[in-house]
Image (cartoon, rainbow, N blue to C red; front, side, top):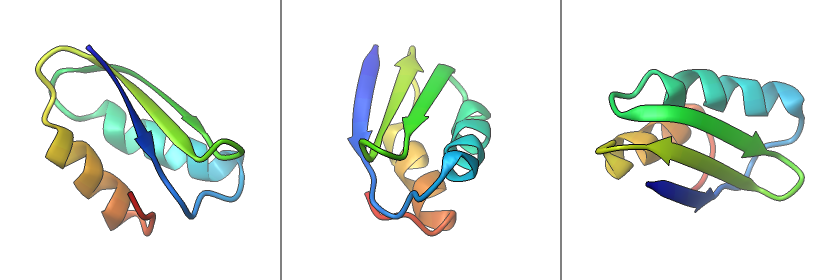
Length: 64
């Protein structure tokens, strides 16, 4: 399953890395690709909890 989230507040490649690391630790997530220029985060995996993904973004100071 692939899900794309619209995220605001990312400003640089470091922002991408923070989200990729945190979201990548969520059960069921296989890969994460954040794009600060587009304001998107693509999450691939099986059976991951979308609310946990959103929570990770908010806890890092981003808006979903």
